[in-house]
Image (cartoon, rainbow, N blue to C red):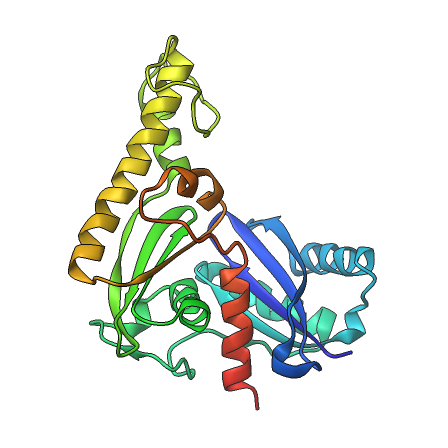
Length: 261
């Protein structure tokens, strides 16, 4: 068995996934795990944790022959590189400018584009075709647009739902932290219910407002959502119906297949 370890490093979480790439087409996702993103953790802390997760799934480090990494946290790149070399003896493929994507990037500076965004676009195109709108509900919420010619046009970035909730708590001294969830009723009967309603429906309205404008400008686009909070927002959206929790990991596998030596 020859395993590919896919690593998606976001501002809040590091998501790991393993694929058996000795099977046709790179195989399906076998297992995935989510770690907290911490710039203070060492190579060995990450390494030992990963070994334990693999063994719990009945896998061994020796089976990991290949690594692909997407990261939006540059200060962690040295630790990530050392982690993969020390524990898997692998030279990672980094998702960065210059790799083959199958997309033409029609943006001002491709070097500043977040790696996860191009990964989501590649996976969304493979699954749903073009034109495409891919929405990722993470620390920030991002919208990425690809036209019918498979040209990446750019996107939209707004603060994530958790950031909005945390800002409300920090800037308003009498308001508590609240769970991010769809409330039982629109009009809250206490402060917590009122905050939940405002955060949830306000965010859904914001997302749907952007989606309405995008679909007006790019009619017929397939729409796909991913990210940790997709399962919270999407069920209440008018325009987003398709949730792909592992979209980024699948995109990493696809890009590794396109660029493997």
